[in-house]
Length: 484
Image (cartoon, rainbow, N blue to C red):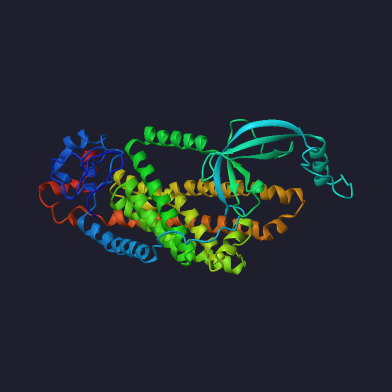
């Protein structure tokens, strides 16, 4: 597969290496571990095995034979070429322009600052009124009564961006409002040019850019300090992933391309870039890529089947309704399926890389293990991983939908009623389809890794294992020699 690119600042090695090359991974002790290098590894003997036994324990994966690299390349190179050709064909060139509706997120916004704050009587500013019937038994009536008799705040907001920078307007804040303002606070204001001048600006949110940027900076520092060069490459891969998402996937869907096709191509591009950037251009990473690809295809098939079978439209809230209103040509159920695929990708990467690494390490610890023994040993690790990952995925979706579940609990709805509603059914399908893909990725990736690493033989590396040093390189004879 070409040169090995490591994420932890280790030397780059190409295959095959001369016998004295220190970057070639060795086993822990004894000549039996020499079979993990390219065919030149046996010439290290006992002294080299001991001197390098622990220095590269966490370094790059042991190089595989030329023949095996060619087989992996024959599968992955056409796939990668198809992915990037698909990106070039579907590249949108930016989101299509549209006339703003002034609804929800589709509003023109500017920045502002609260420059003054005064207390006023709610009744004097007519902030709210009791319902005409005078009924205060309902929550709305009680809130209106409290707002009318309570103490409101009159905030003076100065616009700090846009063509009317420096213009001031007033905002009345009721005592029970969820968003309270303070002097000096930065806010986001909506601008409606067609409205009367006194009503053109209104506060719609608070400015949270600084705390969010600070938190992102702390995250980046923590990743680099703990992960070092591998952590730095992980951050770069994260930036690339968001770039693919914002520059290709989202605009292509808005341009009218099939959401499922765009999601598959975009997710595949993210997978190839992120995995190879973080884990190196190795056979180990390539097996993880193949396992992830198979799992993504399974998720796509299951998602397409059950989204159609359950009649999920994907248009369930104000945001999806606004998208459908602005771009009626977008297939909303396809958009839902695209979200399932992209949302599952991150966890899939973790599972497939872990399983592949487990197989490689088991093989390095005992080169005499065959594919069945490797699979049985690694699948035991995978079962623990399945239990934790599935629980994590389910809780992540449940946490995101917690306010919705709370509403159903308040309404005393039965579990069947809750599960049957489209809002919850979408999350159930998303969770279960993604979890099935994760569960399937463990045996699929483990089997692929066991077959690949077991098919690699010292003699397959171009015949360089021939000669007197080739004998001790075999795991079985190496063991018998040590027992003497």
